[in-house]
Structure formats: structure tokens, C-alpha cells
Length: 83
Image 1: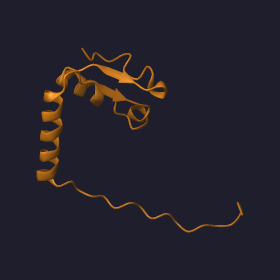
Image 2: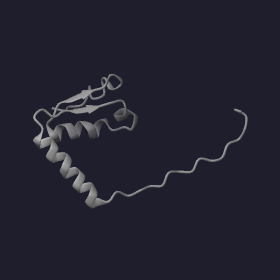
Image 3: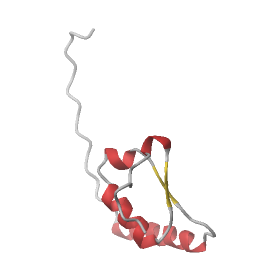
């Protein structure tokens, strides 16, 4: 049926995050990182797919934690200064 027309795909609705819940989530993540003995940041190919390399590198710098990548994400931050 490759020659048959199909219905248009509706666009997904844009949802604005709740600022209070977002802040609570960020606080919890930071508390867990602070309590962790040996935290690290694991990133995958999605970081490149969505153009987030600079943001992930900045996050790693600010948190001062090591970064590892999945096999598909190898070389992601090769040119970023994450130290």
C-alpha cells in the first residue's frame, strides 16, 4: 500500500512545564548528586541527535562530575572542555 495516501499527522501540543515542579525536580537531582559517593554523567547518541553537546558539556563542568558515553555516543564530547 505504499501508493495510497495517508492522513496528515497532527502536531504534538506544546506543553509548558510547571515552574514549581521543575524547580523541585532540579533540587532533588542536585541533592542526590551531592549525596552520591561517585556520581557520573552517562550520555548517548541522543545528545548529538538533539544538538545538546554544548549544554551537556556545560552541565558536566558545572556539576564537576566525570562523563562517560554509550557505544553509539562515542566521541560526543571529544572537542568539549568538560574539566
